[in-house]
Length: 147
Image (cartoon, rainbow, N blue to C red; front, side, top):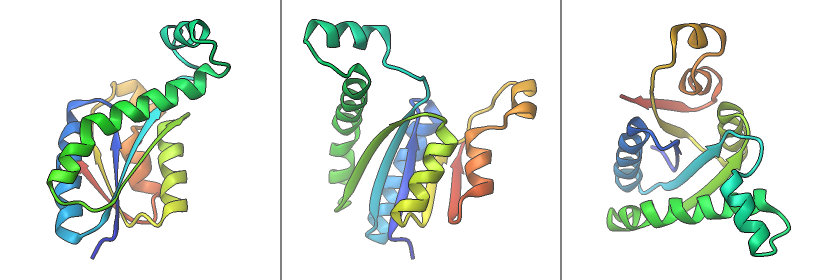
């Protein structure tokens, strides 16, 4: 039924639950699992930038993305393999989370998204809307939000 399942990770408790559900679904449907994390700040953190300078790395932004991807894989790849999911794709991107997720969905053949749902403040929710609401409204595939 589903062959490419994307799970969005943002470090929240809801995202942790979503990863568990996505792994189960990917194993059940023998689907590829796409693990995507979006870093929503414009540049590398001061700690990463300082480390990059000390190591003579020219691009601290790329270093931060690579370190985040490595951490993501270290944390979740064993669980994915243990569940019997054959193919895991991991990506860390920078920018607006909803926009980055929608771009990935549109270019990768994703046919289901699993993501955590977390509340935002009343005013922020009215003005901006949550990432899960934007993805649910705009994605051309099934979207499952997890509480």
